[in-house]
Image 1 (tube, rainbow, N blue to C red):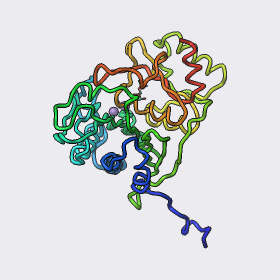
Image 2 (cartoon, protein in one colour; image 1 turned 30 degrees about the vertical axis):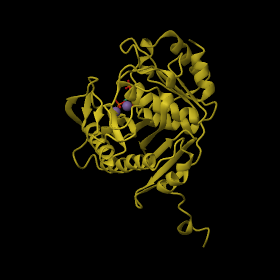
Image 3 (cartoon, rainbow, N blue to C red; image 1 turned 90 degrees about the vertical axis):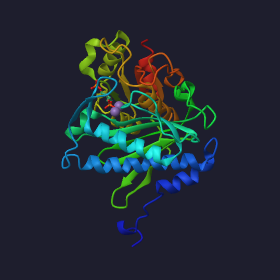
Image 4 (cartoon, protein in one colour; image 1 turned 90 degrees about the horizontal axis):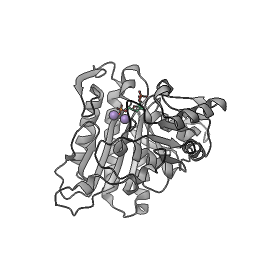
Length: 329
Ligand code: AHG
Ligand code: MN
Ligand code: MN
């Protein structure tokens, strides 16, 4: 009976895990724990909406563009509303940087200590075709004193200053993966219980892998070092895998070993991905799991952001693969 599926233990749920780890935060506070719980809860709500997208008329474009000139999908806008509401009502966050908003969102919680950068819905082009999408977030500590105006220094912090980062992957199952700087842990959402459970303890990126992920359709517009690295991957019979949702491509490579590249192209001289709510977060997770992240030359987390929606070329994944790609520069 003990061995039967019905008697199998369900493991540690996210709340219990966050509480147990609280003392490991560099400055233990219940507020950061609550903030992580708020994000996890908003992720459940977005997950519910994504699961029903085809039925409740929330797939498709909304007819507007975001600040970056990209067509907004209904789910981009809905996810943005859900996360901003959760972060605002939660009371732990004083400012939010979102892909979908041109300016910093001040939440009105003037005594709050944290700042969140978020890509509420990553992989927009995959919404309508039922392919994995995600949410990416970074958490920073506010530098200015509480109850004073938010400063540029507060919002434009380097990735090295992140105190936590994570993503939610809405895939064949929904997962929350996060780090607070003490390794990376992954939780799988159990919809019938409405909870996330620890499923991937202390995740480690294999040092070497055989998967390279890049939009090879743009090959002709890549710079020479990237072309040479792709040729190396082809010659060595690496597998090309490209979902087109950064979170999903990153997650697969985290589990299996691999490299994800979004380089500069002739039309996007700084690449496409955004430093503050896409690259820094995944760079932090990659490093915590034993991998690396670079723009080809510099460590991603050491780049000083100058603007909220700044873009950067991005190479992330298994250490020896990213180093090999870097060696062509
Ligand atoms: P978003 O949906 O948040 O705008 O991000 C889309 C990004 C990323 O998820 C993905 O890796 C990349 O765009 C794909 O771009 P290409 O279609 O140019 O390959
Ligand atoms: Mn994105
Ligand atoms: Mn997005």
